[in-house]
Length: 384
Ligand code: GLA
Image 1: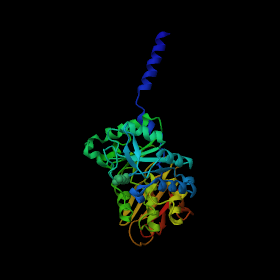
Image 2: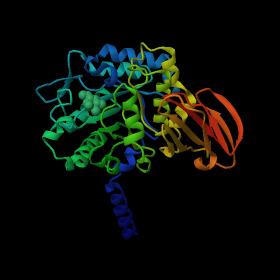
Image 3: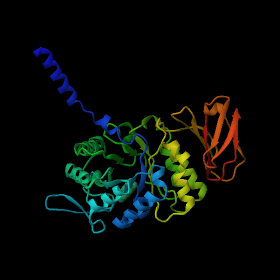
């Protein structure tokens, strides 16, 4: 009797000592995180008031209902540390706790930003040698998301230290007892997709910063992210960077192409425009439910390219209900109608086809689909 109790006790102790960090980090971000981040448009002009205005907009303009949840402050919020070394907001962020409470009061979640180096990319205070203390502070304020940006860490670490450096913060976040999405930002160095999940990352940037122009979107979406699909899945995502929808001089078709490509890539969807001042066309691109459903599909498979011919790129993303999302992209100027054979898409001889941007059922098609794809545009389909 004593013996079996001892065995039971030892078994319990062994179970308690196993490192469940990977399993735990996979509990959150089961689908790619959706929200807003301050950097793409506001950069260092971000402030408490700007952030509150974004939360107000997201909560009331349909974005929250469509699944957007995070309001994320990027770089430039940090002030100095107090005598105990606790990080504080700067004059534009006088009360971080109040800001987070405000975001939470809107039914949204809050995100923050730091660097494992002594300084952030914009030269503000980083978390170097304050990792545990900062994680505790973020949790105390109530944050739900941390973007951790390599920046000046290159002055104190080697690239080969990255997995351990990121794991250190992931462990510190977990030790707070709060569920905090962990976003790795080191621009895809050292093939982060091969170790990002083990280091506790829920998402990792695969490339340099996105810019609000069409060529940047093409380079990041079709370039660096292509072929990384086997590294993505529930809880851990490739991140081709935040959205530029509504920024720069992107046309309506370019915005749709950008959104469609990110959805096909199962990419995190962090809007980067001014949610408080956007036109209805931009809002409709950000909130098309059927397009968002492709990104947020529970299977969590990242799409892949199946065909390419000149400016035409065809991508397929398998979905949880057995249907497939198909993106027919035209990266170039005006083209003749494009015909795509079903065998290229590995769908059967017949398929029920729905166009997700026009919201029209195209009926039961046989063998192929022919579509006109606008210049710098996309035809995004769901096929069953
Ligand atoms: C880097 C990141 C950007 C942004 C800035 C802030 O460039 O890649 O996404 O966070 O730093 O300084």
